[in-house]
Image (cartoon, rainbow, N blue to C red):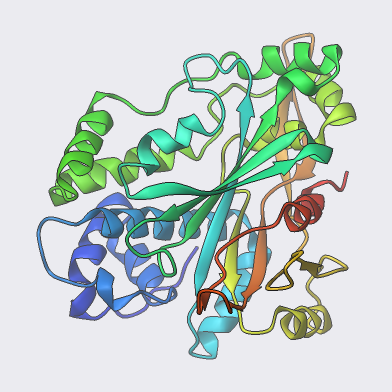
Length: 343
């Protein structure tokens, strides 16, 4: 649960109305007084532009992560008590590059609606140790202040055959969360760069459904087969396409990591440093969650598995451009994935 706080200032009226329509007014007020919002996203128009729709989606996803990750909610609550805001850098999700039923496979399940919101691929990041590929989706209009998405896809064809068979059984029953109403509203936004508040709320609400598990609860035997060969595939089997983590951009990730460790947060042991030295990342270990598994006799059993987590990143200025380095790093990403690999 999120506590109530006064509504955001009138300069964010359009964004507030859009987010409130997709969530509710209390949650919208909380999000817009927690996140650092670019003044360029302000305004009172009844036709939100694509960057506002994108920011509303990110804010709603941020709220969802706080609902699911108690350690993240604890950190954000402490930050609010100090009167500070969260600079939301990016959110990450995992997808399946394989047989996924009615759901488009891999990253295409998300670029089909993120592209009309103004996102474009800003970088490709091979993750060979994980049998995955990551893509950074950066917002064309406001790249530094509208959060990025880091979308990774797991290449099922690279798994051993027993795990491939388990993946087919788990993911081939996936449904498509987007319907005709969402596609129509996305078409308006893509053609015009803006849409009505009702269309914007339809987009955000539909897109939120995309960040859920689209397949039935997995069979325990299939989960165990995936877990043996790919803990990332096993994570997707229970969590689906939920936000794997949300990331706060901070001034000094090393100092913050030590501060949080002293405060009792279960931190990742190391800070990951990119090859160019300008991007540094660490995270709180994933919270544990209870998830259902199907048994051979048709019954279900609950098991504790890794859920989502909260990450921190420091980005330095790229001296070649004089702008913030918004890139990612394959080594960093591989290291961060370990946060959900604990049994």
